[in-house]
Amino acid sequence: MKKEKLMAVPFLYGTLLSLAIIWGYQLEKYDHLELTNVRAFIMWLILSVIIGTLVTISYKLLDKKKVQNSFHIRQHWSYSDTKFFKRIWLILILCQIPVLLAVFPGFFCYDAQDEVNEVLTRVFTTHHPLLHVLLLGGAVAFGHKLTGSYNAGIALYIVFQMVVVDAIFAGLLTYLRRKEVRKSVLVIFTMFFGFFPTVVMYVLCSCKDGLFSAFLVLTIAFLFQLQDDLEAFTSSRRTKICFVLSAALMMLFRHNGFYAYLVMIPFMLIIYKKNLKKLVVMFIAPVLVYMVLSAAMSSLLHADDSENQEMLTVPIQQIARAYTYNSEEFTDEDMAVLTKYLSEDALSLYTPRVSDLLKSQFDNEAYAADSASFWRLWLKLFRKYPVTYINAWFMTSYGMWYPGAVINVYQGNTMFTFTYTDSSYFAYEVELPGERHSFIPVIDAFYRKLSIERFQQNMPVVSLLFSPAFYFWLYMYVACYYARNRRLKACTPLLLMLLVWLTVLLGPTYLVRYAVYLWFGLPLLLMIDARGKQALQRSNP
Image 1 (cartoon, rainbow, N blue to C red):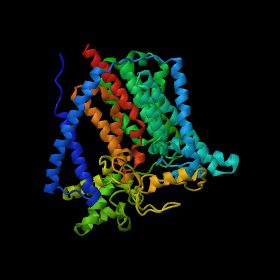
Image 2: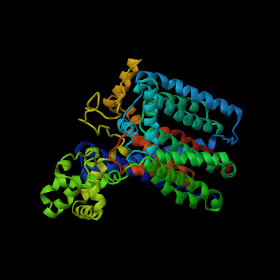
Image 3: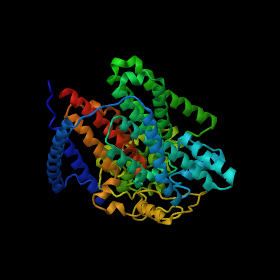
Image 4: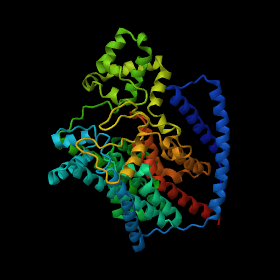
């Protein structure tokens, strides 16, 4: 018997998206929410109905399209798949090489100098993932020792990353080919991965987010493969080993990947409870690999692990905002506790959209000696200023859920070769000891314009393609479609991406680098779509 669709789901989606639009607009314009604004409330109701109705109509059109389309899944890898994989891999590399030459030696930015200095000085911390520190710093040091040029070392790392990430892209497209996705779609995705600026920026960027995002997407693709054919997946030792390595590398390249994966495990064990014996070791193994390798690297490198401010970004920002707007209401006792962790000079560095400067002044030793006082003060201030706390948190995260946000969180900050003014969409930088030597200046100028001007962010519709929030709501749109059809389980592998996205909301600010996996993972949506067509045909013979 066919289950009745959950018709309220599209309107739930419309309600949440319209709320994100209204609140995001207020945060962008006023730096705070206007919860008592009656006009905003009415607009929210109207938008909710409009978006909910449009989503309902679009879902009905999708239903008809899915019933009409024939579909077949070819599970086994063939020689033609290998040829296709190699061809796409080469095409992607060739597409991106001109950009690499234009921005040579590559985008060496976002803490790159700090990571390389750890290797050069042999003084390590766990602030940055040690695997990435060793890869980046080792490549730069090796290239310099071999050629006398730091640029050569930077380029060596960038080329290594490009080869790895493009191989993962090629693997995703090969899997879609095995699903017999249309050739035109494969061509579009090949062009997207090869040319779309946001993708290319992070393929050619030294920051850890490129490799992290690639392995996150690969791990999710393995989960879809598991969902497609559990027996074939579990009977292949090679596939299971690849999954474990992919998940472990994802965690090793970003700490929040570990927390997200850890939360995902219980859900997976519940979903696959009938096959627990086959899967429990496989799901837990990446965590063990991550913990063993992290502990080994930390011990061998004598890495300092005393920093706490990354985990305390949101609480620090909330307390600082409460102080900034209500300092006259702080008692002497409050100030005595607060200044143990943050001096008044440090508190003056508070900026609503980014906590980097403020958290860098946080006294980790004081927190290690007495964390209880910090949390008692945090709770006391929360009771007095709950809306201030909400504003503080939303101001560092709304760019992840408001599609109209202009990413300019570093406005006024001076880098090595420029000062952020209109936009901080991308760092566009070669930090010392590297130096930019462009071989194709016109492409270099284009990427500079995209990075630090509002060029694409001011263009209607086009700006959405550069917005992390737009892609988040696209994934949610697809998930809600399956929820409406009572088939949300088909989206289970995307749970890991959602959990990573939730950890980003607790981060220091909203930058594209923290959500670039939303771009990298677009082919995953077709993996859900493929399963949807197959299941729909089985239920509608």
